[in-house]
Amino acid sequence: MSIPIDSFIILDIGTAWTKAFLVDPKETLKVKVSAKLPTSTEDLRYSANLLINKLKQNSKNPKILITSTFSEANSLEKELDASFVTKEQVNKELFEWFTLQSLENPIILDGGANNFLRNLRAADIGAYLSFPIGEKDLENYIGNKTMRLSSIPEDKNHLEIEEAVLRASFNLYPDFHNPTKFNSVVITGGILSWSTKPTRLALLLLDLMSGGKVVQVFQDKSAFLNSFGALIYHKKSFKQKSDILKNLGSIVSLGGGGKVALDYGLSDIQEVTISENEIALIPALSSQSVKITLFSEPKRVFQVSGGEWGVILDGRVKPLPLQFGQVRTRQAVTSWQRALEKVEVLDI
Image (cartoon, rainbow, N blue to C red):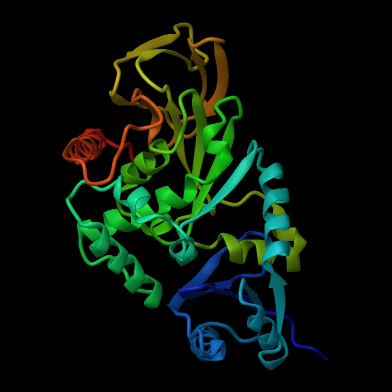
């Protein structure tokens, strides 16, 4: 007689970190325990076995699932008596699940270490920094990071560099430059999951968005998304509604000063005028549906909701006039950071 599965241990073997989640197999999704270790790239089994043994202490008969972009991870399937789920299978399940959750035109932004392996220009990264640094020093930091991908920022300047790398990397996504298309943006991995300053994440995305662009943002705070996709693939009943994504709110890039109407479904419609270079937060709960009208040419209407950010309106001219090494650029970046830090973020 086979012993019934007590739980699932899901391993997400990433470029820098291997994350493990112990999940209850009942219909209501519940992560019981999670842990992570730097990925032992020369021997994937090492960190995988350490995590499995740690999580097995909380389970009698777990089923092990593995997902990874490393092709070598497939070889662990037989060795660990596990089921391997490819990244393509994970993404397919996730986008089907997004459709069930009514996420419109979803895109996933992964803040993991792979962004440091892209061929990005130091000048493009440095343009987003508020402090002076030479191009050679910036290249050295990025080079050292690629050699130790699991290292974490040691101070505010290092955090800024890592955020700037994500800006330069995500700027390659064409959807951010298409104001006619509304997107649901799902952020996950690295500092996108673990940042303690949500408004910094809002500014990171707003810096990329062209004038007239509107998006709704959801955050995977536990970096569980890839593991969730593997779980859906193996156990389809987990496709029900889940709270793994936190609704942060909506962000609107006006591309300059302008007027916006916000309809909360009440008797009065709120009209807000934003000055050029102003960034403003309009309070709105995650349960509130808000119809936003942009008085541009042509006039456009979007249906969004609030969240931890509420609705953030950005009146900066796009694309941002940033140039690496310029004092004026550093002053502008600093002023935008301070503008959002002063805004009270709702605890929804």
